[in-house]
Image 1 (spheres, rainbow, N blue to C red):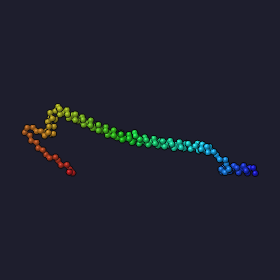
Image 2: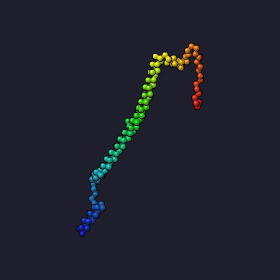
Image 3: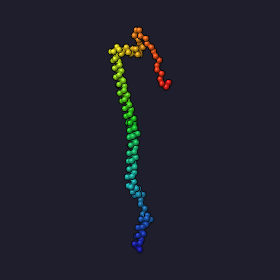
Image 4: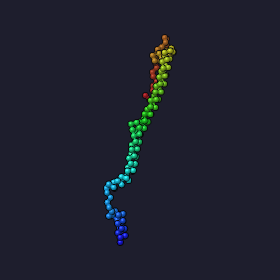
Length: 131
């Protein structure tokens, strides 16, 4: 019968019946040893997610960078157009300062000047379609 009693004690211990209670500190220590890796992984994934959100949507993130880049391209085009217009205006100024024919053309067009004996006819502006 001693074998039966030992066997019964082993079965009771395996089933948790009649087993000695494990101290709370030991159970907590075992739980933290099992849970620290998944918890650490979850924290690392959360921090990586926050970092990615900040990189894309933060103060100087990718979306702001793309907006600034598009604005830069548009401003570069405007600068190029203005430089071209300035060059054309410089040429016109030089012509008006040095070419008498250009001066005469400008006076006739803008100021409606005429040479002696010429008659200027003013025609009404052409009607615009749709108005």
